[in-house]
Image (cartoon, rainbow, N blue to C red):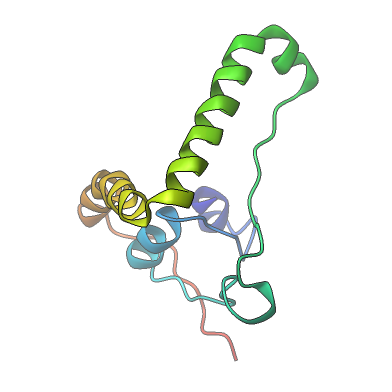
Length: 111
């Protein structure tokens, strides 16, 4: 997404965590809307997509992914601390690598 924003192919994007926070810091992005408050609280935003051809070619990979996704959701439903720890661990490399590079794209303030 950030490459498309840098090329000005797109001007806005939905960036899931931890990418949203990391990109906001690196590229000085502004938030237009918080999709986890008000009428959209707990509204599921996000998806996973494959082509029919890929699913047919890699049925075991697809099944393993869906099983891992289900297991992860079960853990998330039962243990918020595990979710926070996993999110922090996933964000560390992103945040480290982004501290060393400088942005070439900045968002404009929303008026």
